[in-house]
Structures are given as C-alpha cells and as structure tokens.
Length: 495
Ligand code: MTE
Ligand code: MO
Image (cartoon, rainbow, N blue to C red):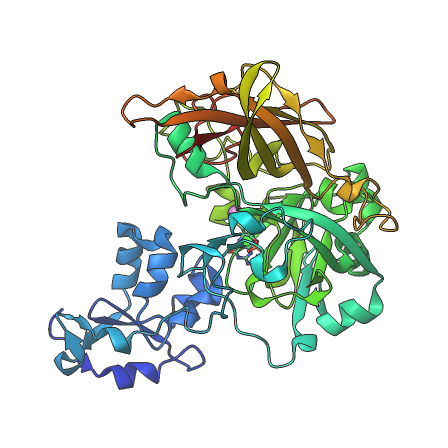
C-alpha cells in the first residue's frame, strides 16, 4: 500500500531489539515485527536485525530468500523509508549495519575463503609444522558473525534443559569451580575439507566453499565433561548409557543461533571425551573458536562442536537446525534431487589423509637409473577415535606404493610421555616420506615444452582397516561433503 507512512532511518533505529516494538527494514520497506518474534522459527536472533535492515542477515541466513518468508513479512508492513534516506531506492550503504563489524582481528597468514562470515584455512606450510596447531593458525569456519564478548565472561551462562523440561543454569565460573577439569587432544575437521579436490577430481562442481587441505587442525582442549554436567543437571546418565532414556539426542545451540546435535550414546560414553571446553592449547578459547565456551565432540565432524555454547537440550529428536537436518549429509553421485529426511546426518568422520609438504631435491642415480630426491609430509586422521595404522605413499600415480613414517607424536594417550589426552585416537597423525622418484615416473606434458610431471599420492588406513576410496567421482555428492579420495599431487620437475 503506497499510502503507508514514510519513516526516516533515525526513527527506525529507535525500534531496536530491546525496544517494546522492534522494527526491521527490508529493501525500502519498514516492518513492525513485534508479533512475529515469538513465532519466528529461528528464535529471537531476529532481534539482532531490529532497528536496521534485515537484508545483510538474510544474505547469511539464505534460507529466508523464499516467497513464503516474504509473505509472512508482508503482514507486518507498516511503512516505507523516507526518500531522503534512499540511494537508488535502497537505504544508503553506510546506514546499514554490518553484522560482522565486531568480528575479531585475525592472523593475516590464514588463507581466507570468505571474510564475512569468516572462513579461512591454515596456511599449507604451517599445517603440519606443529603437532598442535597454534591457536591463531587454526582454521576458522563461521556461518555467521562472532558473538560479542560478554562483559564478564565468568558470568556467561549455559542453560541445560532435560527432556522433562526442567532446566538448570551454570555460569562459566560454576563450570570451572564445581566440576573436574579434563584435557582432550583432538583434531577438528570440517566436512568440506578437500572439497576443491572433489570438484576437480570428479570434474563436477560440488556446492560449498572450495576448501583445499587446510580445513582441519589439531589442538589440546580443556574443559569439563558433558556427562558430568548432565548428571549434575539431574539426567540419569546410566539410562542414557543403557539406551533406555527417552532422550536420544543432545542438542547444542550457540549464541548466534547456530545449532547441532549428537547422539546420546556419544554424549554419555565414559570414553567419549565430549567436553564443554573453555581453553585451547593452554589459552582461553580465542573468539573465533568459541569464546568463552564451546562443545568439543572428538572423532565427530567439526560441525557438531558448537561454538559460543549457550544451550544444551536433551530431546528424543535431533537438532532442528539446517546444519543438522540439511547441509551435513552425503548422497550418491547420481542423487541431485535429494530427500534430506532419509539421509543420516554426518557424525563420526571417515579416514582421511593429505600431502601438505613436498620438496624435490637433487638428481642422483638409483639402481642404474636417474632419480630425483623427494621429501613429502602431511597428516592422516580417522573419526570415531580410530587410530591410523598405516600411511601409503605412491610416487607414480598409484602404480606402486611405499610406507610413510608416522611421527611418534601421540603414541600413548596418557599425556605423560606425549601431549595426547583422552581415551580415543582423537588427534591427527603427522607423517613424512623420504624417497627417490625414478625418472620414468615423470611424464612429459605435451603442450608445455620441456615440462615433466609426476603424480604423488597418499592414502591412509585406520585400525578398523577402513581406507580411502580411489576416486572422487565415486564419492561425489552435491554438497561436496567427506572428500576423502586418495590425495593426488601433480609435481613438476625442473620447472
Ligand atoms: N558453532 C557455531 N556456534 N557457529 C558456527 O558457525 N561452525 C561449525 C562448528 N561450530 C560453527 C560452530 C563448523 S561447520 C565447523 S567446521 C567448526 O565449528 C569449525 O570450528 P573452528 O572455527 O574452531 O575451526
Ligand atoms: Mo564445517
């Protein structure tokens, strides 16, 4: 209705998230969302947009770019932005609040995929330089903005809701003082790690960020056991262990509305080591990694290790979030119109490995043939606490194989003789290989004069004798999840 009133942006700003009548702007229209808040499926996170434009948030929560959402919003239309505040029919750019303006500074050495929200890989040369990835080089995967630092982090509250509806609140200080502290050394790996290889290897683009080898890092985490807190909140952990409890899932929510869940079985497993963590490599959690509190679910896809943790809910159902019900699932290579409901959410990770360092050295002779020295290094990891038992390397595209040396970073899990804490093999293993590449492993590249390349390959095997598939084509899926095919690296000699 063009007859509706015009409002200056200054007027809209007064209707912020704490005001009795929150308003939002979409395009050049103004909406009073007071009556919508209670019904908003995403909860009151919508209030973050109040007093300004909702459009930058919908660029993040893309699920809103749908006709039915516009229809809902239309019911709350109360007016238009005054022409004096419009540029080309939209509120001027500088009038729109940037949801990411409070994000922390980051180490510029990280390889940025997207700046807003922040998605960045560990730089390749730093990948396996250390067994524990330095905090400022740990990969970052944020779906949204980084929530503001609480005025007093010790007062940050975690609400635990049992399946009978009873709730108990804990401040961070409560967690630190009332429960025993535990350490767990665990890698986090994004389900999209190596997606770039999947798209390239299969010759079919998979949806999502084209991560290379660096959406995985390794750290030592400190916090309290989830199962201790659940027991304190009144949950009968024994019934969870026996599988007789009504609550089958533990749902986690973060302060910015991200959410995910894990099966009860993992949550209460006395050897599962699920932490509510407040420290990383001996430091308070950095803001990008969940300050002041995050879940650490070792052996599971990192999407379940919810950052900025504020709510835990026990339920007979998985988290309703799109990150539980949609994005992090796999399908067959032929399935491009999928039934999201029937595929299980990714939990434990499959076996993975990658080459992160490769140096070619001098030419020598070996068994009468010309050969070039090569030094390779990388990581291997498997989910579910399954140990890596072997790392196979090929210098000729997979025709013949050699054994890489697995570094003794984590030979025991007691923390005394190694920096590894926890009951499972939750950490990654670093490996190196020193060898000679026979001259016939190099193939001339027809269209590049004088250039010869060889294909180096790595694959790992875990203690259940799971190993990596040979081709990405066979495991391609529309979301580009779990790209674990042999990592092939084309290397060029004398070029
Ligand atoms: N938790 C919250 N609250 N918000 C997020 O965007 N991203 C998840 C998980 N937990 C996410 C989150 C995903 S997909 C990954 S891969 C890991 O956090 C990344 O953890 P990191 O940034 O500490 O490496
Ligand atoms: Mo992820």
